[in-house]
Length: 502
Image 1 (tube, rainbow, N blue to C red):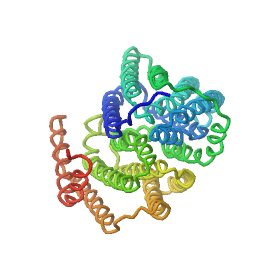
Image 2: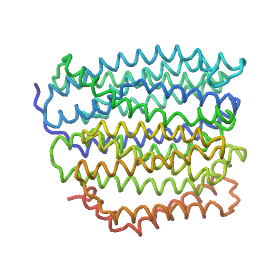
Image 3: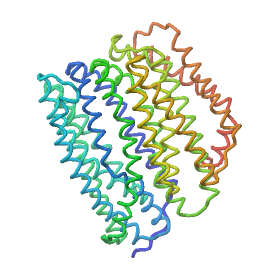
Image 4: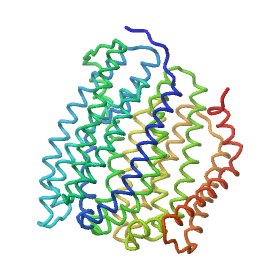
């Protein structure tokens, strides 16, 4: 087996983060460019039905065994110990499981497509179109499941460059194809075809990267029944986390379509799109550090692990407060200028959309850190129960209080999940947190959201993108400055520990 020097966790993390930011930039461009095009070339109710059917596609993630994070953790930990045999074994047996999963998801999705129009109460005029577009999206999902495994290998081996390039190139190609098809008048077909092109290109890049890494490190595929059984035995708990995330990410448009109407679904999801973009920025920390963190855990330096965890939580919380508070302050003006006054929703719904997305992102980060420590079962179960309770509460309340019930319940339940995960981290892993410091950050965060609500009520009569951009920058800077001044000592400490040149 080829002997290689220990890889740089910091370099891999920075590279992963850079790629994630570029992909987020593409997401921003896609949102800003494509949403108005969708609404121009596709009927709004049809678009709402597509979003709801997309929620059903997302729900197919329920059958994913959820071994992706486990596989990354196992490979990264083995690689951190320079154990190339087990690194290769965990991947080669993982890909066998993933191929079976991908085929099953494709078959199940094609069968479910028969009943999608009935589930979403789609009239006969749109039923065939939604069904066929749904089927293409299912094939794209199946390829995406394989990409999760193939890309995860590069991430775990701290070699994310090729998968990162593939994702960027695939996303750009998919965006261009979607725009071209929309301009040619293909309507809704443009959306699933764009998804399929994206996943296909990413698959080719990921496959090349895996083959190249195996050759370069002289790794050998070894099919081991014990490892496959380890994945399968652990999968029931991991599947709960995957199912929970699938429900949380996909159920909103389904509930709104079923209990209200697809027109409101489109309006809600357009407003949520900006919050989703901020979530993508925040999730850079989760995605970029997953492999490096598991690699660090493999080094058995507990003090360093604890310091990294605390710093990641503070940085993520800080970025989240600034990003989502800015969203709350400027969302109505942005949406009005972007797609028109008819798509603007009330300010309290926007606030709870922000809080729901923020709490979900922080819950995801804490869960990812616990996964990196090897704490799969408790975390997975909590994520699943969190999603089920959210769905049940939203279903009970949506007819009583309307649209706001969805983001309100999602925010409330995620906050409870964060508390339980924090207690788990403290008790199980003996990681001590400064309660006063946590309380201070929470109070400052709440203050920023109060400030953002006050800013949102200032009537500025924004009529151009130049004017809006100026207001956006000033708002973000003001919120950032207030937040940084109050937390200056903690932020300086993180900078000195992790970013200052030594």
